[in-house]
Image 1 (cartoon, rainbow, N blue to C red):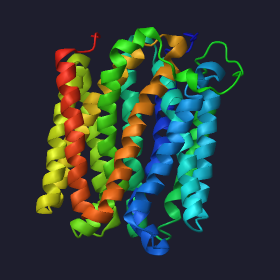
Image 2 (image 1 turned 180 degrees about the horizontal axis):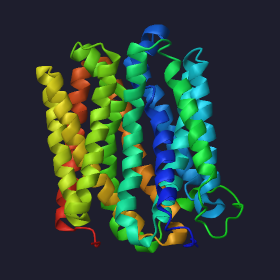
Image 3 (image 1 turned 90 degrees about the vertical axis):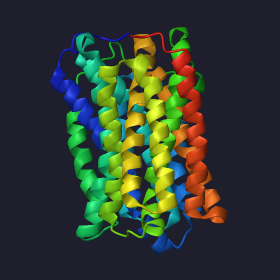
Length: 397
């Protein structure tokens, strides 16, 4: 049961959103640096995607085993634990001594993101109060995507123009995590009767009956949108450097940032369009973005790639916020954290599985051929979901 006594405190909502953004920024900090790690450790493009996928494995593991834990123990303890895991991940990169520490750092980062996804989203929604749910929904999804976008932008700028390119970005993030820990400690707890969980159990992500009607189309749309995000956060810097011939790390980070900027813009438009139009519309805009990304690989054009990132990001943002709103509104309060975690589980399957496929295909087809194959597959998924929700829109306002 969720307490209402502190839900009207908008500063608490803003602070929770800031904590969410700082935590998620750490998960994408390594994105522009993968080329430097490849040169230093001499591993293949497939290994880059495996390192990236280790993060997704961490996320999925936590969502399966502890996706509902914040509904039981409270939001604040889970957020503090997530911040601690994020700090441990940053320390692995600071002390980087080879592939094992890179993998460990990414897995720990995934654990943190898995905890943030359900607990931070629920905290932002609940601290805003029932009269401001739409605005809080945007704050939560924008904090998520904005944090993910700021990570590569920050590390790209620092790696290109500051000393210690493989260390300084993570030291800066450790300082930000300290600020986030202070903010979290001061947050009001929104779970009325926190208790120690009896055990971690995968069945905690079972969906309540109220959610099942809207969950499937929303989750598949999130899968397709996050597949695009996975492509940009895992291999876009390699595309920019090897296929387009641009080797500036700040540019690579900025290209990745544009897809998340587009996502945030798409989320802002969702409130105006409404969920029933935003979900199918987002899928169709996502298709247009993927077509532009594929075109950029054929004609080797950085501006077309950026246009595809922005367009695809807008589509992802529209579909993501519409799906998350549908799912969170349908979920009863006592199951909201677990239901949101199940939604993110589908999304993170999208961010991991297709990207590893791109890495594997790149060994035989090259990055350009693998990227084209990826675009075709995700276009097919997005078209099918878009047509389905046009015929059977979510039963929400």
